[in-house]
Image (cartoon, rainbow, N blue to C red; front, side):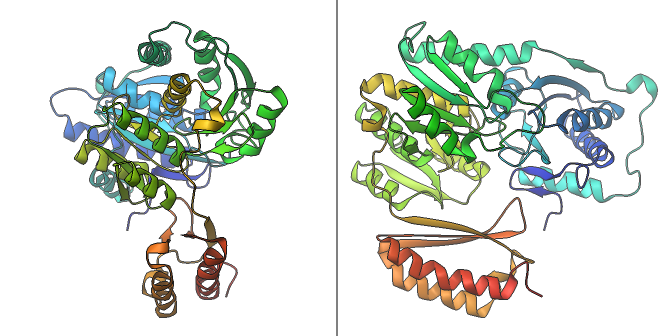
Amino acid sequence: MRRYFGTDGVRGVANELLTPDFTMRLGRAIAQQLLETTPNHLPRVLIGRDTRRSGAMLETALIGGLCSMGVYATSAGVVPTPAVAYLVREGHYDLGIVISASHNPARDNGVKLIGSDGYKFPDEYEAQIEARLAEAPEPFPYPPPDKIGLWQFDERESEQYLLYLLHTMRELTGEREPLRGIHIVVDCANGAASQYAPVVLHELGAKVSLYGGEPDGDNINLACGSTHLETLQSAVLETDADLGVAFDGDADRALFVDEKGDPVDGDAIMTLWAITRHKQNTLNPPLVVATEMSNLGMQRRLEAGGIQMQRTKVGDRYVAEAMRATGALIGGEQSGHIIFSERATTGDGLITMLETLGLYLHYRKPFSEIAHPFTPYPQKLVTIPVRDKHAWQTHAEIQSLIRDAERRLEARGRLNIRASGTENAIRVMVEAETLEMVEATITPVMEAIVRAFGADQN
């Protein structure tokens, strides 16, 4: 079992796990891995971060570790995670690094690795970096002074990403200002989208009402953004906007609100996009990749329209892997982390925004009339803090309750239990034809987990 790397890089509380000392050691381990896998040239790394107070501190430590081993580092500053994925590929970097904890509170931070192809670093490479970190106390000899790597800040990297977004929408619509006359509320979560989403929308002609666009280092994701849609819902109704979009801290996901204030999640956007493309005979293969958490109503609607749905484990890397294996054009998560493989290698909240606006322009109807393409099954997801997030897999009573629940649901619903990838917790999800069936199924399983492993139990 890996100690540091989870489903989305290394993540922890700043100055607890993620201290400057640890982050410099991590930078040295990453550098050593790069030097061995790119022996024919000096490795080049691109680094981006979100707006957290600890971001600059950790970036500085990381750069120190990288450069001390002979790696060349370029900082793009505050940029969305998907911007790094795009720029690494376009700029022929050997690695991209993002310092962000995505939708987590400001006290947390993380280090995500993106390969030269724009995809998340493979598990086996992360395992090798972990092994290097375990070597103590100074596993890597320092090179001589004339072999130290150089660092630079290049603001042109972020400008290139902005131009790419504008080109994407103009190519999609054939117009320079396709959003003229459309009023959009944008909640940037006081995160990395703050200097990007409003600029892009203004340049495309939209009227923009901006919320969560004044990051101060501590307010990222604080009562705003995609984890707090109530802010966006109220703003859309108060401003009489046509629709609203909310990002998370590093802008790799986007959720929406229609003009009536009703939320629109990733399942709805993927379904609408796939159905539309299928009708245009441009969904080849007729497939959507989603995770175990996506609603059963989505699956039934896609299948009724002649579109297959393939499920993966929770985590964007698993979605991306399945999309590459099958050639799928779209895949993602209910949370709004959506990959459009014709546009990007990873989930990109800004691309998701533009593709969704493209659908809005295509149908020329109120957003509420197109943005709810299926009736979702009642679904409940609970997160249970525990002492051991893996022991449920061999616990006799819990396994018996799971079997009972699966027999009860059969084809009428689903039960999903998994260990959290980012915290010491177990997530239990049940969906079924009725809310009563959901409650009757999830309650005994929850209670058994709390009795056996609850964090407040002795």
